[in-house]
Length: 191
Ligand SMILES: [Zn+2]
Image (cartoon, rainbow, N blue to C red; front, side, top):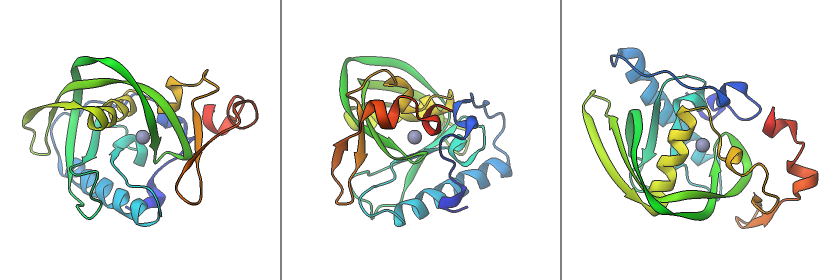
Protein backbone atom coordinates (compact mmCIF):
# COMPACT_ATOMS: atom_id res chain seq x y z
CA UNK A 1 0.00 0.00 0.00
CA UNK A 2 0.95 3.62 -0.41
CA UNK A 3 -0.48 7.01 0.55
CA UNK A 4 -3.11 6.76 -2.21
CA UNK A 5 -4.71 3.86 -0.35
CA UNK A 6 -5.55 6.23 2.54
CA UNK A 7 -9.19 7.28 2.23
CA UNK A 8 -10.33 10.80 3.02
CA UNK A 9 -13.67 12.47 3.71
CA UNK A 10 -16.36 12.28 2.38
CA UNK A 11 -15.64 8.50 2.30
CA UNK A 12 -18.73 7.17 4.16
CA UNK A 13 -16.88 4.17 5.64
CA UNK A 14 -14.94 6.60 7.87
CA UNK A 15 -18.15 6.95 9.88
CA UNK A 16 -18.78 3.22 10.23
CA UNK A 17 -17.95 1.06 13.21
CA UNK A 18 -15.13 -1.44 12.60
CA UNK A 19 -15.34 -5.13 13.47
CA UNK A 20 -13.35 -6.91 16.19
CA UNK A 21 -10.47 -9.09 15.04
CA UNK A 22 -10.88 -12.77 15.91
CA UNK A 23 -7.73 -14.70 15.14
CA UNK A 24 -4.73 -12.92 13.71
CA UNK A 25 -4.60 -14.40 10.23
CA UNK A 26 -2.00 -13.78 7.52
CA UNK A 27 -4.48 -11.30 6.03
CA UNK A 28 -4.39 -9.25 9.27
CA UNK A 29 -0.58 -9.41 9.50
CA UNK A 30 -0.32 -8.26 5.88
CA UNK A 31 -2.82 -5.46 6.53
CA UNK A 32 -0.73 -4.19 9.46
CA UNK A 33 2.41 -4.10 7.34
CA UNK A 34 0.49 -2.38 4.50
CA UNK A 35 -0.83 0.25 6.93
CA UNK A 36 2.68 1.02 8.13
CA UNK A 37 3.89 1.39 4.55
CA UNK A 38 1.02 3.72 3.62
CA UNK A 39 1.66 5.86 6.72
CA UNK A 40 5.35 6.32 5.97
CA UNK A 41 4.62 7.02 2.30
CA UNK A 42 2.10 9.71 3.33
CA UNK A 43 4.63 11.30 5.69
CA UNK A 44 7.29 11.35 2.99
CA UNK A 45 4.89 13.34 0.80
CA UNK A 46 4.25 16.07 3.41
CA UNK A 47 6.57 18.94 4.28
CA UNK A 48 5.40 19.94 7.75
CA UNK A 49 3.47 17.01 9.15
CA UNK A 50 4.38 13.80 10.93
CA UNK A 51 2.16 10.72 10.73
CA UNK A 52 1.57 9.69 14.34
CA UNK A 53 -1.17 7.13 13.87
CA UNK A 54 -3.35 5.30 11.38
CA UNK A 55 -6.45 3.17 11.83
CA UNK A 56 -7.37 0.29 9.49
CA UNK A 57 -10.58 2.06 8.51
CA UNK A 58 -8.38 4.77 6.94
CA UNK A 59 -7.25 2.25 4.32
CA UNK A 60 -10.88 1.16 4.02
CA UNK A 61 -10.50 -2.06 6.04
CA UNK A 62 -13.11 -2.11 8.77
CA UNK A 63 -11.12 -3.86 11.49
CA UNK A 64 -10.52 -2.59 15.02
CA UNK A 65 -6.79 -2.04 14.46
CA UNK A 66 -4.58 1.03 14.63
CA UNK A 67 -0.89 1.91 14.65
CA UNK A 68 0.72 4.59 16.83
CA UNK A 69 4.17 6.05 16.34
CA UNK A 70 6.63 4.96 19.03
CA UNK A 71 8.49 8.25 19.02
CA UNK A 72 6.34 10.99 17.53
CA UNK A 73 8.95 13.67 18.14
CA UNK A 74 11.53 11.94 15.97
CA UNK A 75 10.30 11.17 12.44
CA UNK A 76 13.56 9.32 11.73
CA UNK A 77 12.19 6.58 13.98
CA UNK A 78 9.76 4.67 11.75
CA UNK A 79 8.57 2.20 14.41
CA UNK A 80 4.91 1.86 15.34
CA UNK A 81 3.01 0.02 18.05
CA UNK A 82 0.04 -2.04 16.85
CA UNK A 83 -3.23 -1.97 18.81
CA UNK A 84 -5.80 -4.67 17.97
CA UNK A 85 -9.32 -4.58 19.52
CA UNK A 86 -8.33 -1.54 21.64
CA UNK A 87 -10.47 -0.49 24.58
CA UNK A 88 -10.21 2.59 26.77
CA UNK A 89 -10.60 1.17 30.26
CA UNK A 90 -10.20 4.43 32.18
CA UNK A 91 -10.15 8.15 31.43
CA UNK A 92 -8.22 10.62 33.55
CA UNK A 93 -9.42 14.23 33.84
CA UNK A 94 -9.12 17.11 33.16
CA UNK A 95 -10.33 17.61 29.62
CA UNK A 96 -7.78 19.60 27.63
CA UNK A 97 -8.07 21.56 24.40
CA UNK A 98 -5.38 21.08 21.79
CA UNK A 99 -4.88 20.91 18.04
CA UNK A 100 -5.19 17.72 16.08
CA UNK A 101 -5.31 16.64 12.47
CA UNK A 102 -5.99 13.44 10.58
CA UNK A 103 -4.64 11.80 7.44
CA UNK A 104 -8.26 11.32 6.35
CA UNK A 105 -9.14 15.03 6.75
CA UNK A 106 -6.53 16.75 4.58
CA UNK A 107 -5.37 20.22 5.61
CA UNK A 108 -8.07 20.78 8.26
CA UNK A 109 -7.00 21.00 11.90
CA UNK A 110 -9.22 21.28 14.93
CA UNK A 111 -9.03 22.29 18.54
CA UNK A 112 -10.52 19.25 20.26
CA UNK A 113 -11.19 18.49 23.94
CA UNK A 114 -9.65 15.21 25.07
CA UNK A 115 -8.96 13.59 28.41
CA UNK A 116 -5.53 14.36 29.83
CA UNK A 117 -4.94 10.65 30.35
CA UNK A 118 -6.27 7.24 29.34
CA UNK A 119 -5.65 3.61 30.13
CA UNK A 120 -5.93 1.39 27.06
CA UNK A 121 -6.06 -2.39 26.77
CA UNK A 122 -5.37 -4.08 23.41
CA UNK A 123 -3.76 -7.06 21.68
CA UNK A 124 -0.43 -6.82 19.92
CA UNK A 125 0.25 -8.34 16.48
CA UNK A 126 0.96 -11.72 18.13
CA UNK A 127 -2.42 -11.69 19.85
CA UNK A 128 -0.99 -10.98 23.33
CA UNK A 129 -2.83 -8.57 25.60
CA UNK A 130 -1.01 -5.44 26.74
CA UNK A 131 -1.98 -2.31 28.65
CA UNK A 132 -0.82 1.28 28.27
CA UNK A 133 -1.34 4.31 30.49
CA UNK A 134 -0.77 7.51 28.53
CA UNK A 135 -0.94 11.23 29.23
CA UNK A 136 -0.87 14.39 27.12
CA UNK A 137 -0.30 14.07 23.39
CA UNK A 138 -0.05 10.27 23.40
CA UNK A 139 -3.36 10.05 25.29
CA UNK A 140 -4.84 12.38 22.66
CA UNK A 141 -3.61 10.17 19.80
CA UNK A 142 -5.05 7.05 21.47
CA UNK A 143 -8.47 8.71 21.92
CA UNK A 144 -8.40 9.88 18.28
CA UNK A 145 -7.54 6.38 17.02
CA UNK A 146 -10.08 4.56 19.22
CA UNK A 147 -12.67 7.01 17.82
CA UNK A 148 -11.76 5.81 14.30
CA UNK A 149 -12.57 2.21 15.26
CA UNK A 150 -16.00 3.49 16.35
CA UNK A 151 -16.66 5.45 13.14
CA UNK A 152 -15.92 8.86 14.60
CA UNK A 153 -13.72 11.52 13.00
CA UNK A 154 -12.15 14.29 15.14
CA UNK A 155 -14.21 17.03 13.47
CA UNK A 156 -17.39 15.31 14.72
CA UNK A 157 -16.45 16.46 18.25
CA UNK A 158 -16.29 20.13 17.22
CA UNK A 159 -18.90 20.36 14.45
CA UNK A 160 -20.88 23.10 16.21
CA UNK A 161 -17.88 25.14 17.35
CA UNK A 162 -17.13 28.08 15.00
CA UNK A 163 -13.81 28.78 16.74
CA UNK A 164 -12.37 25.27 16.54
CA UNK A 165 -11.35 24.89 12.87
CA UNK A 166 -7.96 25.75 11.40
CA UNK A 167 -6.02 25.15 8.23
CA UNK A 168 -2.38 24.39 7.68
CA UNK A 169 -0.50 27.24 5.99
CA UNK A 170 2.15 26.53 3.34
CA UNK A 171 4.81 27.51 5.90
CA UNK A 172 3.51 25.04 8.48
CA UNK A 173 1.54 27.37 10.79
CA UNK A 174 -2.19 27.19 11.53
CA UNK A 175 -4.74 29.84 10.60
CA UNK A 176 -8.44 29.94 11.62
CA UNK A 177 -10.92 28.79 8.97
CA UNK A 178 -14.10 30.70 8.19
CA UNK A 179 -16.72 28.48 9.86
CA UNK A 180 -19.74 29.83 7.95
CA UNK A 181 -18.04 29.71 4.57
CA UNK A 182 -15.65 26.73 4.76
CA UNK A 183 -16.99 24.38 7.41
CA UNK A 184 -20.66 24.58 8.39
CA UNK A 185 -22.32 23.29 5.21
CA UNK A 186 -19.27 21.65 3.62
CA UNK A 187 -20.50 18.34 2.20
CA UNK A 188 -16.95 17.01 1.91
CA UNK A 189 -16.67 17.10 5.70
CA UNK A 190 -20.16 16.07 6.71
CA UNK A 191 -21.21 13.81 3.82
ZN1 LIG B 1 -7.33 10.21 12.16
